[in-house]
Length: 45
Image (tube, rainbow, N blue to C red; front, side):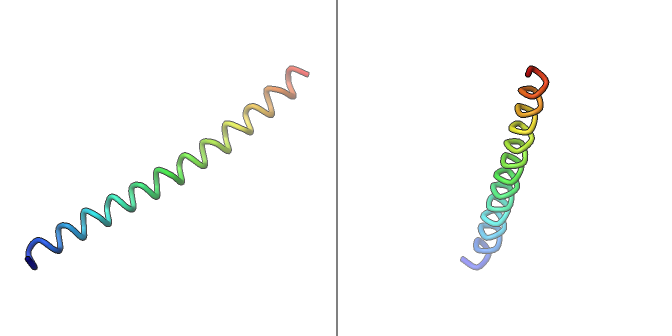
């Protein structure tokens, strides 16, 4: 049981970290996307 605990904990930690990084990157992309839309709208006007 002890031999199985460490790999499971490491895998869960890795999945958590990758999920957090993915969500953070998506938030950054949303910000950039909205800024690009604003600049495009201003150029059209």
